[in-house]
Image (cartoon, rainbow, N blue to C red; front, side, top):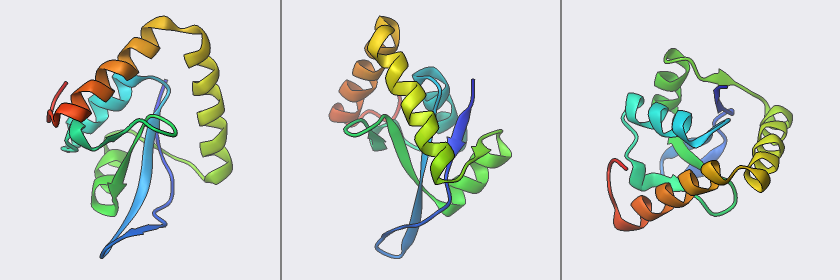
Length: 108
């Protein structure tokens, strides 16, 4: 199991952002907590992930996140979606993270 980050490409104002996702919600949320990304920034709509800036990406990699290219990122997403289709506990974890995000909680 792992946390993954892609290359920073997406502009948001002055920042260039990348995606941080994981093989499961526990790992994703633990990494967000470890590097100081508030859980309220969780992005549940298309695929459970966080958009993080380059500075947070550096922290994530230092904390053990795996750097991936676009194709590898898509493979991670496909594996995770397949897991969500069958794993009730994982779906419940995503729903809990969504609820915390909507409330604006910094931690779930």
